[in-house]
Amino acid sequence: MTAIADLPLIASGKVREIYDLGDSLLISASDRISTYDVVHPNPIPDKGNVLTGLSTFWFERTTGIVPNHFVSVTDGVPDEVRGCAMVVRKLQMLPVECVVRGYLSGSGWKDYQRTGAVSGIELPPGLRESDRLPEPIFTPSTKAEVGHDEAIDFEGAASLVGDRALAERLRDVSIAVYQHAADHARSRGIILADTKFEFGLDVDGELTLGDEVCTPDSSRFWPADEYEPGRGQPSFDKQFVRDWASSTGWDRNPPAPTIPVDVVARTREKYVEAYERIVGDPFDEWLRRTGAA
Ligand code: Q0Z
Image (tube, rainbow, N blue to C red; front, side, top):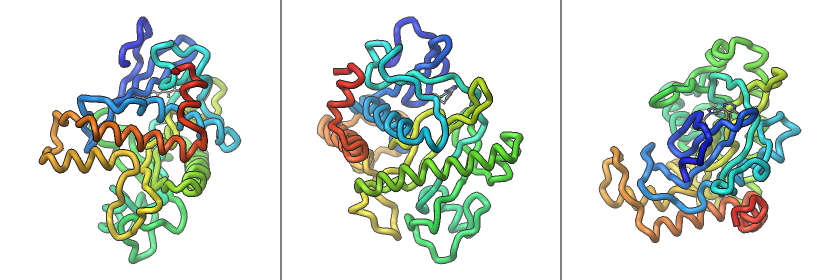
């Protein structure tokens, strides 16, 4: 599922690849899965299809908030990646990760405990781990070539993009897209705790949403019915893999262990459930729409 015949590879991440189609790009989401930042040797079948279906859903619903790079999940998609790949417009990407947090988790929770603030934004005292924030906040980070992105404040983002007005639009549209997606997901029983967007400028210099949007790989998805602030929350999609990996005594250093078939099957079901809850259509319909099945 990785090498697509003849297409020049432009970039590859842990679980996705980008190919050059000439005037456009092809982003292909693989079935690979990582836990604790390490990719496991065996795939979760349909994970790439689910993530591409979710990104497509959000792109189609948020064009009124900000234009995006989506072109097609049918025309121009090679047969071998139908369902898990998207043709997109080429952008000049901006050098900042646009993180939005609606809940206090991960590095945001760590920073809050240390300083009472996240990304320079002072928060009320007494918040607990996983608490919902009074309103979603923009907590940008640098794009590290290797290793982890580094948290920066709004001023840092403004100087990275070199344009304060553009940084303000990045912040405002990031929060608006998150708000839309989080409200929708919450109505379907999934808490979208936080998410990360990437933007670029199109050929006309228009601010354009790129990359993937509000997938479980770019966001924290939590099951709403298990939500309980004051502790870390289970992951909607990866919890079976994490629980199993921890139970093996794996030290979280590479190589990651092979995931057993029953854990693979239950995890695949969680990805498909996330798709069907959020989109409201049978997952099979996505496979039909894209010609994957
Ligand atoms: C996104 C990334 C991935 C590895 C380049 N529309 C665009 N135009 C130009 N460049 C990009 C995009 Cl989306 C672009 N990335 C991030 C994605 C694998 C890295 F699938 N890199």
